[in-house]
Length: 132
Image (tube, rainbow, N blue to C red; front, side, top):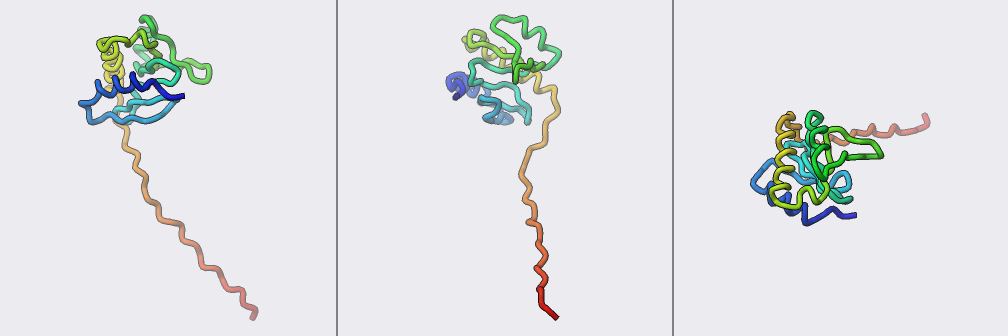
């Protein structure tokens, strides 16, 4: 199931001035990563997943159109799901983007994952099986 491309474009536009944002298809949607950490995701199931952190989790759940993010039937602390009515206006979407950015700014930057080229294992030459 594809993610909401209109919302993805809106998020992309609001983050367009930043050089540290990377998009990745993860968790059934399109994630926007900052310094290697997920800050929000446009979900295929509808809504916006926002990383608010453990300390702000309970407060965010008390806001309109917000519910707990669930994976495999379990609530994920630190992430909330915002229904489309919660970010219908640009001002509301900007608020959620800022909350995700504010939390991710508190995290240490993750090192980039570059694939290192490993030397191919050297094989031993087969020993000849000459009969003596």
